[in-house]
Image (cartoon, rainbow, N blue to C red; front, side, top):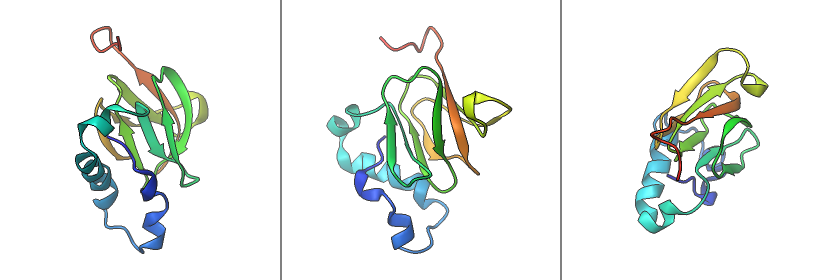
Length: 123
């Protein structure tokens, strides 16, 4: 699932965003893009607190990433993404996003740890 570049900042320009819109929008964009487009691009994408789309290809371990709130997150990795409010994946986890899932992480996150089991390891 990918966050389309045309989505950047559209929530502010269009007024209040319905609660399900940030979750459903990436899914609708994926369906409209088709399978060829879904296979290309970063494995992990999020709309950052700077309202820019950020992507990470083949993430491993702890990664600095600032996002959350009504901003979309897409985990196309084969592993679990665990979100932390503190940099360096410190403190208690704020949320977990399973492989292939998309959604919102509230209220925010500052880092993400990617965990892969030997069964889900990338080739």
